[in-house]
Amino acid sequence: MTQVHSTAIVDAKAQLDPSVSVGPYAVIGPHVRVGAGTTIGSHCVIEGRTTIGRDNRIFQFASLGAVPQDKKYAGEPTELIIGDRNTIREFCTFNIGVPGAGGVTRVGSDNWIMAYTHIAHDCRVDDHTTLANNTTLAGHVHLADWVTVGGLTGIHQFVSVGAHAMIGFASAVAQDVPPFMLVDGNPLQVRGFNVVGLRRRNFSEARIAAVKQMHRLLYRQGRTLDDARNAIAALPAELPESVSDVALMSTFLAGATRGIVR
Image 1 (cartoon, rainbow, N blue to C red):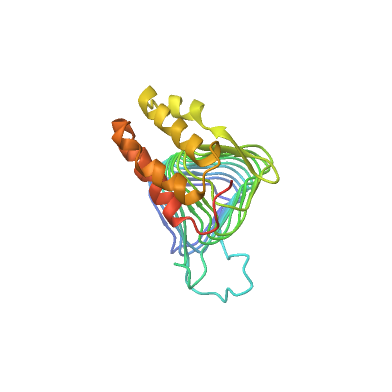
Image 2 (tube, helix red, strand yellow):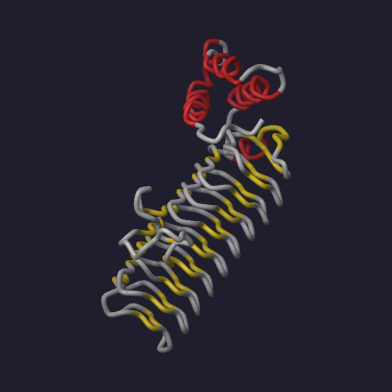
């Protein structure tokens, strides 16, 4: 049977795998589904239409699936969906979505989410991200795979942060951050590219050289954005190993809606 502490309140309609563990004084609502091996700490509140995958570790005092902090929300059946193997530390708050914007807040798998992180309605956090203490995501933010966010950082609504980017401590992020870039500050500035992170992920030196060249084209040669985009698109002719990374950058730049940090 599911390991539920005697003081926890779990609605009879909640769907918990038999291997789920629920700590003292936790509260779990009727529309919650939790996958195998997930542990839920004491005093957690998990409510709304919330689906949680396998082998997550949710620490005490987290609040998952509460209604969004949006005055337009009127009780519609929106969702929070969380993947597998995430670590969600103390006092994190993840909200369900709002209608008209997909209605789903999504957190992927293998994320390391530290204390007091807020993930607002309709955000999308992909896989392998690291969000340090007091990271705050406003509505509709998208963090791609392997993004790292420093503590006490706020990210404006509708901002996208590209894969492998790193945001430094106490930054104010109001524009889109291209893949691979290293940024920080208020106002936000690009400081370089995330070479340490790429090496930790076993990028070859040729791929790192291509990322370095994309950084130069965007930020070090005084080019217009259109000129830089065209030059980046031409890189695979001289750097064949850059094909996938150039495609990632080109797709991001073409889809940036808030303008990229420059």
